Image 1 (cartoon, one colour):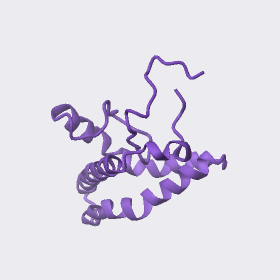
Image 2 (image 1 turned 120 degrees about the vertical axis):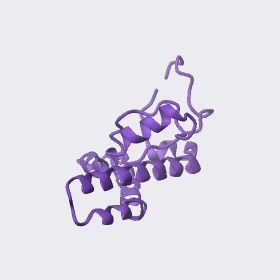
Image 3 (image 1 turned 45 degrees about the vertical axis):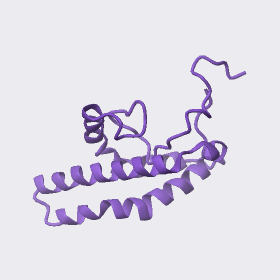
Image 4 (image 1 turned 30 degrees about the horizontal axis):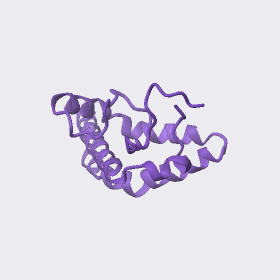
Length: 136
């Protein structure tokens, strides 16, 4: 199976499910960052509640641009994506637990405990080749 490429697989992306997953990830990260800030007795803990807005206004568009640049072969863009993804990774375990308790909320078949991706694209399953098919 070919690795995901935003420019090549753009037509197979289910944008509604992708944005739903991004919203779930940002909300679970918000909860985790908020409780981390409260545990550290940070005075700015309530500013963490703005994380979904920051994610959708800044991180998500920057991630889409960086994904295209990565497809074009621009060096070290993957490192920028990895550094930005750390802000969203913190909520993945909570979302993983929610997915185990109530399957179907998360629009992917197997949601990982930790996902080192800033954006997880949900693809149309019909467009994907069967797992046992040969790529040649």
